[in-house]
Structures are given as C-alpha cells and as structure tokens.
Image 1 (tube, rainbow, N blue to C red):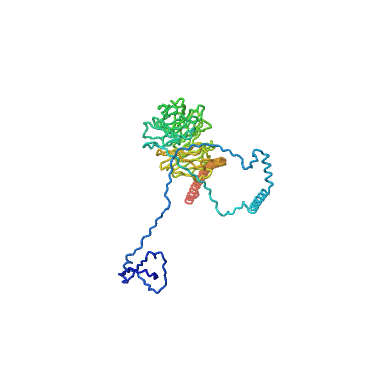
Image 2 (tube, one colour; image 1 turned 90 degrees about the vertical axis):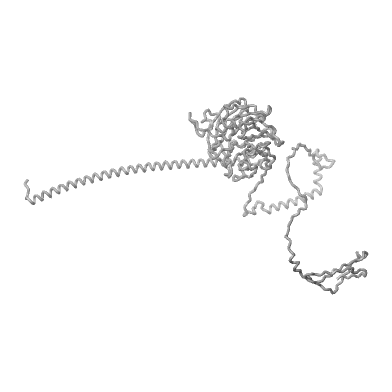
Length: 609
C-alpha cells in the first residue's frame, strides 16, 4: 500500500473496470504530484491490505496459443568473400647486406685481434662473468643429471600400433589456356621450350577439319590471355616438338601423314613440308628428335605401322624406313604391321629406340640393322590394350615406363620379358604418363575420367600419393617442367591446365636416389630369380613329360611283348590241344576196330591168320 505523507498529493481520478467473465471490480488509482515534489523520495510502510487473486479466464484461455520457436543466427561482423585473380608479375632484385661485427667498446677495434683478446681476458677475470658462468654450469649439470637418470632410448608405447606418417601433397591451378572462339579441339601433344622455360607449344587435332588450315599455338605462362605465337599449317598437327638444341625450330607430324618444320625467326607459316606421295600413308601419332652430329634429325611413327627418319636439311623424303611386323618376316611374305602409338629414343645411343603399338606390343629396335629382322631386336607383350606412353627414366637410363589399358609398368633392359614394378589395376582407363624431371621416384599418369595421379614408388607401391581432379573430360597429354615446379595437362575439350606442384613434389630428399636405385636393383634381381625358377620349373616339367613319354612307350612295348608272348603261348597251347585231339581220335578209331574184331571173333570163332 502506498502512503503519501505530503498533504498536497491528492487523487484526481478514479476509474472502475468490470471484468465481464469474473464479474469482479478492479480499481485503478492514478496519483499526481506537483512538479516541485517530483524528485523527492517515496516512503512505504506495512499495513493490513486485502490481497485479491484473479483466476484465469476460460474465454481468453481458448484464444491463447503458444508461438512456434524460431531460431536465427546473427553474425555481428561484416561479411567478406575470398577470390583469386591473376596480377602482373612482380620484378624481384637481389641485394647484398654487409654484416659487420659489433658490440665492442669504442676504444676496442674488432679488426685488431690483440686488443680483442686483451679485452676478453679482462672480462673473464670479473666477478660478474664468474657468477654468470657458475649459474650456467649449474643449469647444465642439472640437465646432464636428468639425461643420466632417464633412459632416452626406452620405448614407453610398445603396445600402441605405430601410425603411418603421411606427407601432405598439394597443387594449385595457375591458369587455363584455350583456343578463342567455339573451337574445342582435343589437345594431342604438349612440349616445353627447353631454352625459354616459360613457353610451351600445344597441338590440337580435329578430324572434322582435315582439309582446312589449322593452328598450333605457342603459349607464355607470363601472358596467358593470348597465344605468344600462332603457327599455321595446311592440316591439323597431331604432334609437335621443339628441337632440343635450337628452340627456334619446331617439327610436327600431321594427320595427312606429312611432316612440317617451322622456324619462328622466319615466320609463323610452314617453311618445310614433306612430299605427300612418299610420306606416311596415315596420320602421324608421335615424333621424337634424337641426338646426332647435326642435331637436325628426328623420326616419326604412324597408324600404318611405319617408322620414318627425317633430316630437315632434306625434308622431301625420309632417310630410312622400318615397318613393325609382329613376327619375323620371310622374303616375299610381309604380314600386316602394327599401328604405332608411342615412341622414345635412348639418349646415350642414338641408334636405339622403342616403339609402342596399339596392340600392346613394345618393339625394341636398332637402326644399324640392314634387314627388318635385324632392326627389330625384341618384341614384348606389355599391355592388353594400346600403349599410350613409353618413356625412359631421366635418372636411370636402363629403366623405362609404359602406360596402357589399366596399368602403368616399369621395365628394365636387363630383363625385358617381365616388368619389375607395376601399379594397381584402375577401374578407369589410363591415357598418358610422364616421369618427374626432378624426383627419380615420382611419375604422373592421366586417366580417362579427368584425374591425374601422382605415384611415389619409394613411399607407396599400392596407391598414388596424390590425386588431382583436372576436368570432367579425359586427360590426353601430360608434360612436366624440367625444373619440376609446373605440370601441364591437356584435355579432350581443348583446355590446357597449368598446375603448380608443392615443394615435396619438386625437391628431392637426400637419399631418394639411393633408395630408388636399391629398389630397382632388388626388383630386377627378384624378377631374374623368378625367371630362373620358372625356367627350372619348365625344364622339370619338360623332363617329367619326357619321362612320362618314355614310360608310356616302355609300357606300350611291354604290352606288345606281353601280347606277343600270349599269342605264342596260345598258339603252342592250341597246337598241343590239336595234337592231343588227333591222338585221341586215333586211339578211339583203334579201339573201335579192336572191338569190332572181338565182336566178329565171338560170332564166327577165331579168325584164321
């Protein structure tokens, strides 16, 4: 109850409200005060008062409802978005810094060794220096006692299974190159410029534009918006490569079977073109420059199964030809040659080369041979499908890799019959593969589902260490930069993706080469032992078959001898039986004659003789 002590305070208005449902009256009192008493405190006291309780209204309770709970998160900070953009390349400069020795007093010259030694001896005799060294010595003695008390080589967690140490690999897309307009020609080949590390060339092939002029582009990664140069040709270029000694010269194989040579110093149009009548009869799938004294020779492979050697000084016709026949040929009998899908040469010996075919057979050849049988030194069935890529390891010349069907395999020249290392069988088909230029144990494979897998065979032989989703379209070509930082991926939709790899995929560690060499040697020995064991098993099986054959022949001879003996015994037996029968027949006849004589004697008496 409110007690108003001020006599000036009075009630001016009183209103009564009737509750319709409860039929009870409620009084509302409004109190007014003069302005001068507004800020004065109010005084309350306890008095007897009537407390009235109001029950709920049924009518109002029917109109009451519980509101639905609504939760909404509110962030009281400004929203921001992250985006990437290509900016202009920054110019860096290396500046040297001169580090001079300091901290000495002004009267001591650090260039005078005698003054420095005299000052050091003076400091070592002070009490402050001795106390500081004593404190450091006590700390060091405490650490030494701790190391002596604890066995630092003890394994406290022997029961816990060790976890695999996983190294994180990564990559990022620098830019994507593509043709202008609505053209989406598949990227069939990519080649880096060995002199200009920022430039590369790409070839596009489209069978629907067979007789129309087509373009081959040279790109610069510092200016990705437009091609650096556009090389024009009369037919689509299926493959193109830089001359390793002169980056201004490029050679290309066309879908028409001709070869074209450009010199960018002269112009962007084709300068040298081979004669169509004496070139390949089908499209050229691969081209490789090989080492020579003039650095002007290369060879090509096509779908017709023919290898041709060319010299840019005389490009009208090939200098040599070789057909890849599946078997040794006889004069006058030439079988159909296998279509060539990939080739590679030996950098140490210019006359040795390898060629992979669409039938999965790898041919090892030597150009010094005079006849086709002498040029082809070996034929090995590597894959069930076409060999998409074949490349020698840039770190171990004796080892090379083939990619085809659903596997990538590593071979050695010491054992050409079987591979020494191979990947798992993929569910999707492999389309290309390339060795890493900087790390000897790493290689890349492209898949038909648009994924590039990175394999480190020293770290893991069961699965790739890193998989990169490039596109939804098949990956057709791969090329690794010689410095190892970039890898270029070409897809069937005409896009060329430039990827920057993480440092652990670029830089090699200290003992990687030794581990790789020991693993290859171990696997080579294992395959050699297995081959020897298989040869021994085959020889044993051959001896067993020969022994079985000899036993069978001996058994047949024994059976024949037994049959002959039985026949002789049967003949002798039948002879004895027949003789006995004849004897008995003679005895029977004599007995009958005697009985007859006795019978006549009994009737007539003794006979007269």
